[in-house]
Structure formats: C-alpha cells, structure tokens
Image (cartoon, rainbow, N blue to C red):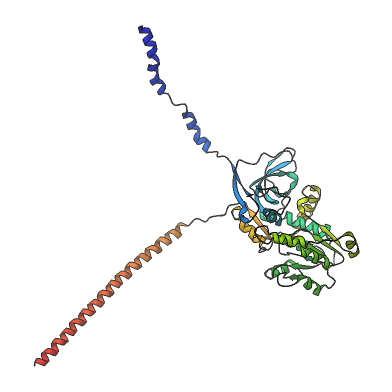
Length: 448
C-alpha cells in the first residue's frame, strides 16, 4: 500500500473527534421543550352516561382538545351551569327515547358565555350571556349548538337561575295556556307543585285572575306552597288527593296537569268537570329507584289511560299530551314563548326557584336529591369544581400549641403523681418510725 493510500484511509479516523465535538442534533429540540410546556393541550370536562342504570353510570370525564369550531349558524358556549330534569333521570335508566345510546352526554339546558361564532351568525356576539336549549348533550364545559337554540339572559339573572329557566317555564307555559287554556275564575290541579315545573306552573297561574290552585306535595313543603300561591296544598302521601279536591270542589277541576302517568292519569280524567282539560306531560311513576324497575313498568302499562273517540265525545272533556323533547325543531314557537317569559321575568312576575347547586363531581347526589323528591324548585349543576378550603396557618399553630400543652400537662401530671407517691412513701416511713418509737417506749415502761 502506498503512503498516499494509507493517508487517505486514515483521514476519516482523524475527523471523528471533530464531529464528536459538535452539539448533538437533538439539542435544539431540548432547547425548545420549555416553550412547549408553557402551552399545554387544552381540555374540558363533561358528564358521560356510560350505560343505563344507577347514579354511578354518569361519570365525569376530561377530554383533550376542544369541540370542533362552530359551523355555519352555530356558536361555541363556555358553560357555567346546567339544569337537571326528569328526562335526564329517565335517560339514565334507558326510559327516554330522545337520548342517543351510551356512551353519551345528558343535559337539555344550560347557561354560559358565547366564545366563538360560526359563519353567518349575526344576532350573537362573543361575550354574550346566554341560556341554551337542546335535545341533549349540554352537561359539559364547552358546547357547540345552533345559534337559534340560544337565548340572551335578561339583566340581573344569575347563571344558576338561567339554567333553571327554559325547560321548566316553557313546559309550564305551553301546558297551561296552549293545552289547558287557563282562564279567570277556573281551578287547576298541579301535581308535584314544589318541583321545577310545578313552581313555574304556580307562578304562571298567578298571572290569571282568581284562579284556585290545588297543589300536591309532601307536608314538609306545604308552607312553601302557600307562600308561592297554592290555594290548597295536599299531601299525596297521607291522603287521597281526589277526595281532598272534591271536599272543596265537588264538581272537580277545570284543568289537571299530569306528570305522573299510570293510574293517576285515569284519576285525573275522572276528576275533570265537563269541558275540563287533562294535560299529560310526564310519567314520573316509572321512577321508583336508581335502576329500571320492571314491576313499575308493568304496573304503569297495565294502568295506562285509554279512551276511544266515542267515549271522549260523550264525556265533554279534552285530553292532550306534551313533550318538549319533540319540539326542538319548532324554533319559532319556542322563541315566541321565551320572549314572553323573559318579559315576565323582567317585570318580576316570575322568578326561578333554585333548590340546590351541585358541582359536576357530585352529579350522583344531585340526581338522588331530585329522584327522591327532596327538592323544592330546580336542582342545578355547576361546572365550577368544589372549593377546598386549605387549612389556615393559624389552625395549624393552634393544633401544635394544643399538642404541646397536652404533652406539658401530661409531664406535670406525671411529676405530680411521682411527688404524691413520694409524699405517701414519706408519710408511711414516718408512721412506721412513730410506731417503732411507741413500741420502744412501751417496752421501757414494762422494764421499769
């Protein structure tokens, strides 16, 4: 091998140390790592129905990213509060057919702030405080909905009140005035009068002159019913509400609002006066526990109300049904009702009664509150996490001082106990010596 060839082969080995001295190629990526850590991926929380069953089937989940940007005619809303309705309870048990199959998000109403606008949206602005009505899917921190499913919150209304407004008051308004055609000097029976729809119905009945209101609720809620304007509260648990109504109004009533179903619907029809109106808008009797109850289903089906056209003709009575979940496409109708309701709110004529507010983390407790009929008014969920009050430094110092004092007292007690023992021992010693002295003295006397 020539010297030139040897030099050529040796050249790469001489350059290797110089290449090793260069910075590694991954150093720039490491340098930019802190910048990436400063902008973490956004997340949002939502309540997901994982399957049909008890309260534990609704789970709080955190999702990465954000919902897709609003499309034409849509808005993105940052949710602050959500309303809990019987449709959500029934949906959890698999009894509400307007809800998609699990996993899915519950929630027909919420309130919040508009964050983004889709193309063509001109009647909403970023920052608007809005109430939202939708078929489902609103129990989450961010939602994308049609702009015409949102309604501007009136001045002075809280987010909690806004979440208690749409479903209850739209339902109450339509079943009383459109279906029931309530007029002055009539009487009406409102079942579950202390619930969300019940409190709204009572307030709206008071807008008509000289209306007599019969309202059913447990005795503990009667004082509230009287203050709200219910003329005759009735405890459905301890008395026969049909008999109680007929004691006061022997002919019956002009209107019955029935959210119960089953045998109660038959009773309601028979309680009507001639030309009376029965409005069926729920089937709360199906909910007898956390999970679907087949016996309750069978009983409700067996006792369901049934009447043919000729019987209805001869009875001179009317029967109508109402389900807000099937009116989600009737934008003009709903918007017109909301406009009237907002005006009544501004006048101070109606005001949502919020029973309690629960964070997302306690959705099971919120559902139990409503399903066990403990609520007076609306049960509301909030997106704000529960506040944990940290222990104050003063409290910690007090605890330390208390422990020190206890330790000191124990030590003093121990010393005192030892002293006491020593004193007792000394006294015993003295007594023993005195006894011995006495014995010696007696012996000397005997010798003398």
